[in-house]
Image (cartoon, rainbow, N blue to C red):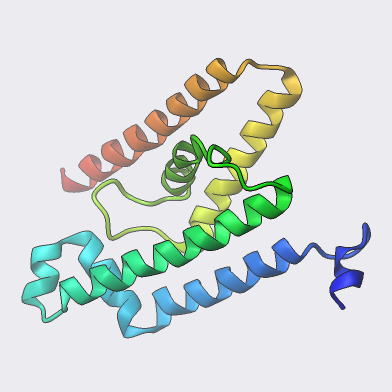
Length: 165
């Protein structure tokens, strides 16, 4: 089965992995108690703690989960590059943060969805691919991506302030 998926006309295994992760994490964040605790902790740690959420335990689980997902991402990148170099993921942080903000996550926390982050990732991927095809230099690509991130955060802050007035 793996060979048929890896063929040119088959479905890439990475796509199957991505869909599986989206389904699992969407279920966890929307349908489980731990998902609600994570959102509560992200929104206001003190209020979550006063509400009975074991904030240290939830924080530990979140960081452990992110370590697991980072290891999985490292394996995927090493597999795609056919090499495991220490500088393979340099400056991916900017893309990840921008993807989350473009996808609807809030700078103040407690807001955002898995599907939104994926949509933001697709937007950033199209932006990266388009700039590479156009021959934009790496320095300008970083500048443009930084401006897109700044615009997304500015949009988040202004819409949040309009809701308070």
